[in-house]
Length: 253
Image: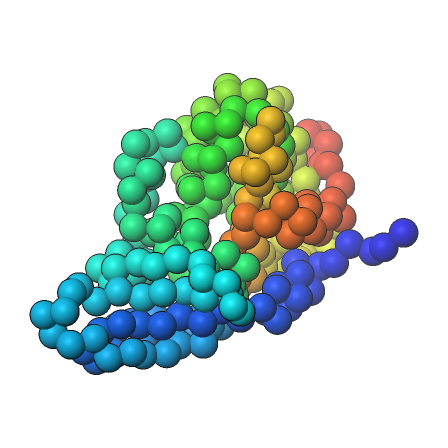
């Protein structure tokens, strides 16, 4: 039986994949160059004369065209808006458009706001489908405190929610979720869970909605990670999470 990979090992395996991002503009904007400098993609520039149209970029995976996006939507990635689960704003959110073009691409510097925006998109998918399993690890259970309303709504929708992290807080909805702790330490720093932010949703009744996120904290507040809509990669995220057993309620504070 194969041993499930650690989250760091899973991140390393995804890092082998590269896409090509080509920017069509009079010149390559410094902001775009900085944005993709820490994204593991091949960045290219094609001259677009002024007046010939709005600057845009395309994403190619090998010989396969993935899609295109106007540059203003790209800038939103640096400081994305955080939408509420179930909000109609998710449909046209610029951040969501970019994430749809760059799944399974490792980003070397993701901050907590960018991770929260990506997490909210996954939570929104789970809420809209309304069935299935959602695993989420925010390093320590106390970091779920600010997301109480979101997870109450997900539980009420009937989702099988599993939360992971250092057991430094007991959610008041603990009877409705399964809590998993880190066997290597309970202070959020010694064990693996203390260094990783992850999510995995199996798609419920619609496997095509499966999605996931893995981000390892490399320095305080700065993460290296990826998001995915590939069912096989999502299964690997679930496998990595399966290494952490459920924590009895009696062991929570």
